[in-house]
Amino acid sequence: MYTSGERNRLRDKLIEAARADDRVTGAALTGSAALDAEDAWSDIDLAFRTTAPEPVLADFTTLMYREHGARHHMDVVFERTVYRVFLLENTLQVDLSFWPEADFGATSPKFRLLFGTANEREQAAPTDARRLVDLAWLHALHARSSLHRGRGWQAEYMVGRIRDHALALACIRHDLPAGEGRGLDQLPAAILAEFETTLPRGLEDLARAFRAVTELLVAEIERVDAELAGRLAPLLRALTS
Image (cartoon, rainbow, N blue to C red; front, side, top):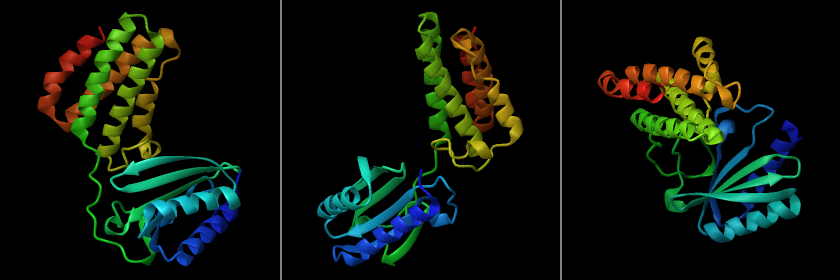
């Protein structure tokens, strides 16, 4: 396990390496550090504005493996930006993103410029409640069919997705982050207690859990769009009968 001091020292070294590279024309803190919200479990998130994204990415990858204990990495690509996510020997996660100069800029509040300049960018669109509703009823259909086919593990997966979408709707309602479970633990205790009852006690308990989570989903849909809830509620409840 890494310490906060180790994490901070490594981040400083990476920023220093970026400043020393003429191809890197800007850098920013991203993630929790940009909001002064780090804790002992936070990772490193840095964004680099560069005139040559691919060569700079390759050189920083070599640096991470040669000098900083990287053991594996994976890539996430958004538009023309590559986010290379490193796993270090001490289990620290380091996310380095390499942006073409024309694209470099804040797409969320988690962006603090360290040097260089940033472009004005549109903020990422908030999670769409209607999209969550649509995904939830789709997974409910598959939960029903999985249960009737005797596919317990598939049914458990589908019921879990319904719960995820219903909880995300609750997060939106309370102005909390709805993606990747980031706002769940900030939901009111009463809501979390209700959703706790939807956790199955085993595969034999899935039908009950399906009914329970469907009722909570219907309640969340009613808060999003009463007319839509009027159309969907009878169908969703029929799936659990």
